Length: 74
Image 1 (tube, rainbow, N blue to C red):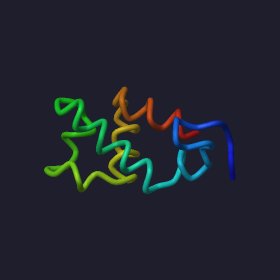
Image 2: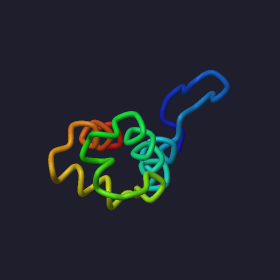
Image 3: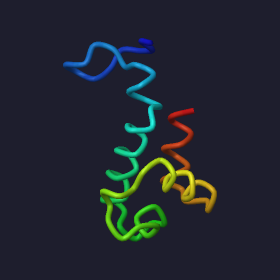
């Protein structure tokens, strides 16, 4: 499902680009790398193990970065 124009080289963003589980996990991993002291990074010992369940846990605990990712997907 095409939603909106995307980035250069990507003419359209799709629903999957914004809100799929695999993409949310990827965004959460990237966010944890950029913010290693945040709750999202501290919920697991390895950043590449962060998944959507980790993201949801961080959202429930009020992590600002996780909440931002969650709201963008919604």
